[in-house]
Length: 287
Length: 258
Image (tube, rainbow over all chains, first blue to last red; front, side, top):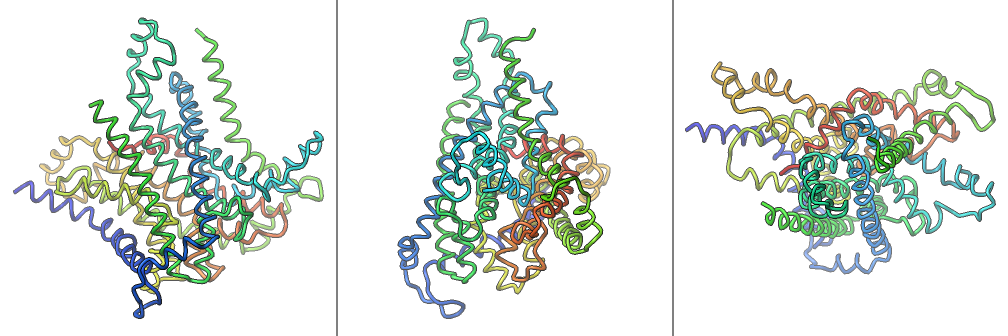
């Protein structure tokens, strides 16, 4: 009796969230799937199979945007994980000493979009600080925002803004590892690398997983800065899916929009599934 | 005992700290230094007192943000408590689905949201910005994890004393979980304050654009004026961060569900 009341209460409590998610995510997704397979609009929808997908796949702008987005993720995620892990390991032993530092690392995360965009322009635009500095040193001029270097600039912006977030997630995992395991290893004469491999790594899978997930989430958030830095038609090195979507919004091409959403959904789910499967396997082995 | 590696660690940590803060100082310093040379408060006067266009947009954006934060808090407090303290079938499956939803970027959900807002007739209104953000799942995750730490004994004792659910939440559970609550407030505030994709996609009227995206989308012609506006936009998150950075650090970690 009591159990069923708790269940009812549970459903009641989560129902606002579920209704909202149903209304704004679940139901519209079904519609998007339908749009992606149809032509026309409103009540005059005709099923056309995968023609829209073929169209979008043959669209040069889409493949460019999709390729750049994947290239960005492939470069950004390993970089941020390596950087954040290194910082977290450095801070592991001094987590209490550097309580203030932990919040300081989060500081860039609060920089509003407009601030980040202005900052990039102040530093990297033709009249910015970096080109001025380089020419003072007699170095050759690089077009930071107009050429291939733009990709590196947005990568740098992403790392600057989001590394602190991942450091905090990783540190939270590191501080749960008992100190005496390291002392015992020291007694046995284990090297730093051995300690990392045999003690730290196996106990960190969950934290690494979540740091990776949030790095992924934050990477997609970073596209808003990239979008604003580049304008609607940036140079082709930083033409991301966000630009493609925005341009499709401008001429309200539902079919294109829907196909792009569905394809991106599939990619994100696939990445998530790989990460999740991996961490489940590692944790099952451990526990 | 100071070893070589701990000195190295300190140096690197301070270097990272410097890199985190320096850009803020740089922007602030430049906002007093116009291209024409000298130091001036003229642009601050112009933004804060001379014209009302920036401040009006600022307050409007703040209001939008407060609606998002308030809605997100209510939804995630209820759902968080439901997930943390009630037993029901399908709970774990739901949490898993929510985790997937959390990972989905705006680029995926923008078009579905647009279609729904269109059929609800909400396009080109502030509600288009507010409603979908209220149901973002991150807050629920953080609060579910946070509420789990409230011991069953306390909940049972309160119930025995005839405490209803609403009073239990307000008087017992919420005061014990301030870190989680503050963290949800801050994160959803940041998300609301930094909306870019949604206004561009859902709103036609540029006058309705929140300040952060408006300034970046159509920047003021004068670069120093632009910087002063930027300082104005940094103020609310900076204020929140200064007061609540400890809670933020504690709360972010709560999203690590096991």
